Length: 419
Image (cartoon, rainbow, N blue to C red; front, side):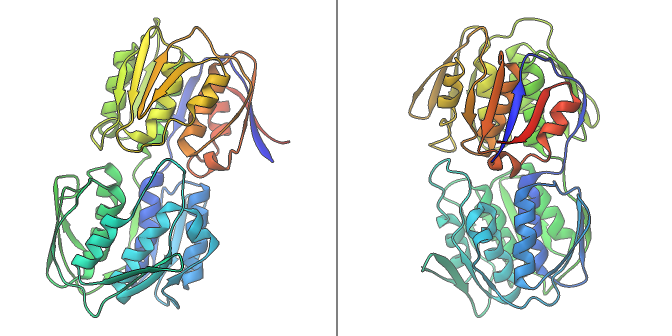
């Protein structure tokens, strides 16, 4: 069993380059299925387990997938042999549901097993289904799989009942080749939604309004391969920003889009950190004691739910009381039990975590209960006195490429071991 071993107490210093966005890449790779001719060459892809999983799913559908380097894939979807995606890889990751939209758009049918992912709460696909049915597809769920089929797809006006990143992207993908115009309202506006739209447009789609409240898609007859580069990862960048503040370090985070990080920067400034923006970089330093703040997660441009767990680690050692209200997922405070093992004082009431800052944490054996919780435990290990051992790190590897190497380059005492 692989674990991460961290001896805490070192202030992080130096520069770290951010990889491509996980949440964009895991939608863009399934969308490459839409290219009925020419290859897609996609770079700035993070070298993470979720991407490796998608590579295997693509190959299972009949795509030819060539790895040009660790961050660049060439995908030839010309001769797909099946529209059935029913494998263990499909079941184990949430983003596999994007194959429903992409296969439906191109072949007018698909069968995809219901996906898994991190256990952070109920994540139904009812809004996805609502969108597919509005486009003219018949949707059935049986034997643990979603089957969709349509004689033709036609444009429709669709108002999502809740703001959903997954449904916004999936229905947008499905509508790219629907006859007529599709209008999506009450959509998600996250940077990776915009990135997927830009990728589809590069393939020949006609999508306008991504990043606003309304997305309009004019259907086209076909899409072709293209060259595309994934945007930087907002969540990985936010994690390193928080780690820099927590360790009272001095870190420059490069290959970022500062605009995407404004809610995180604002909250770190409120805590007492110094945040300096460059054109494509952010520097985080600390020169005074940090104080507690209140955080409420919200859809973009609000504070990202994927950063609240690392933020809770920082707030566990700041002066005073902090509140974190998780408005997106109902079960995203499980990691606080692990932080309490290290001496954090946290009380969870429903979706609210009440955190009373302590002077320091102490190292011990803890679990990565999910992907972002794993990042929170890494930051906890970096600031704790003594040795911290993190188990179940396969969750971390799903979203953070070579996390120990990046932190070690900043001066952390961290290593990966088989134990």
